[in-house]
Structures are given as structure tokens and as C-alpha cells.
Amino acid sequence: MIRARVQVRRPPMVAIATIAAALLSPWAMAQTKAASYEGSPVRLGHGSAHTIVRTDAEGGLASIGVVFGAAALVGLPTPAAGASPNFPYLLPMPTTGPKTVVDHVVVNWESAGHPPPHVYDVQHFDFHFYFVSHEEQMRITFGSESESGDPGQQPPADLMPAGYVMPPGTAVAQMGAHAIDPKAPEFNGQPFTVTLIYGYYNKQQLFIEPMATLAFLRSKQSYSAPVVRPAAYTKTGAYPSSYSVKYDKRKKVYEVTLGELR
Figure 1 (tube, one colour):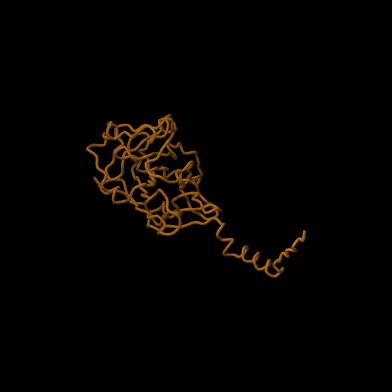
Figure 2: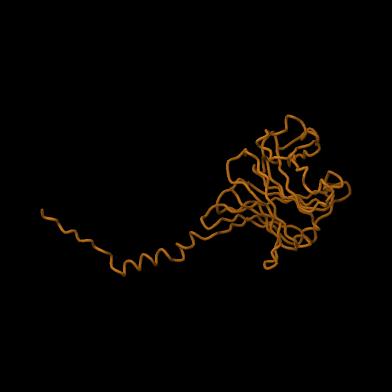
């Protein structure tokens, strides 16, 4: 039997070096680096606030947050006599980068706090991360604030995190109905500093809402905790498994973050 000789042509070392250089080029390496995308800044106090979306090294969603400096906590508005003490600030999401389940963020400066009394009636910020458009949010109506406790507003059990309840008195027009965690420290004899609330409307998930007092933010402390997740979501996408309220001493900025998205 005659065996044919097969000659294997190996690429010259120059070609190998060229390929390796291309693979290690800054552009190629950039494709595997974590990135961040920022929304347009909105005036807040004497400073500004903006949204931020971060990705991990593989390009997957890592976190969604709101960033602001210390100046944003100075010169905040106070209501005129008889006017609402709630001042909303609409923050758009970044126009570039990956899409998220969050359509927009509304930061509410609660200059006199809000009910229930002796719980949330201190100056604080509500950070509403909405899953619906701003137009849909502004169409939210209720017959009364007690409507949040009606069966027609109660979401299915799989859309509500374990332990959370949506009692009467938490329905707010153009905002939503608020579900609370009765096990949270502020409902068990401790002062309110940071907490997490879920929002609903017509039995559907509407927003997730970290809250933080002005005093806690000015103390420049940091806080993080797991997010109690429901068994299901109204809208398909990546949702947080943790949240945090932190002050970065090096950058001198605060960030309220929904993290560990999955």
C-alpha cells in the first residue's frame, strides 16, 4: 500500500503574532470590560442627579442606580402654605447601553415625610424605579388612598414578595399603591433610615422603591441589603437581588443602587 504524504502548512510566526496582537488590541479587550452608561442630569437642590446602568465584564446587566453629589442635598425646596410637601424629579434612563426593565426613575423629595405617622413622617427621598412609561404612570388614579387595600388592587400572591403586604392608605394618584414589609425595623420600634418598598397598580407590578432619610444621607454612611424577590414578575427582564445606599468618599458622590440583577 502506498501512503500519500500530507504536508501540513503551518502559518509563519509573523502571522501568529499578528493574530495574537489583534485579539489583544485595546478594541478587542474593551469588548470584555465592564461599562457604565449615564442618563441626562436633572437639577436637584444645588446639584444634580442622574441614572446609571452598569454592565459586568461579560456585558451583562449588573446594576441600575441613581447618582448625585452632596450639593443635591442642599437648597431643597419647601412647600408654600397648603401646598404638597412632595417634590418629584423625573430622571430619564441612559439612551445608550443595554435596555432594562426600568423605564424611568422618579426621585421624590418628601420635605415633610408622609404617612404613616411616626414611621415615614421625617424628611426623606423616595427613589421610584418604574417599570412602566411616564405616560402610564401619570394616568394612575384611585378613588381614595384606602383603595390600596381593596381586593381589586391586591396583586396575585406570586407577584408579591414573601412577607410584604399592601394595606389601606398607601394608594397615591400618579404614583401607585405601596406594599410594605411589616418586619422592617421602622415598623418594629426602630427609627426609619433606609428601607425598600414595592409598588403596584391594577394588580400589576409598577415599581421598586428604595427610601432613605435626609439625615442618613448626610451622615455619609453606607447601607446594603438583599432584596426579597417575588416568585414572578409582570414584565420579563432582569431584577435586583440586592440594593444599597452608599457614599463614595473618593468620588464624593452618593449612589442608590439596585444590584445583582438576574
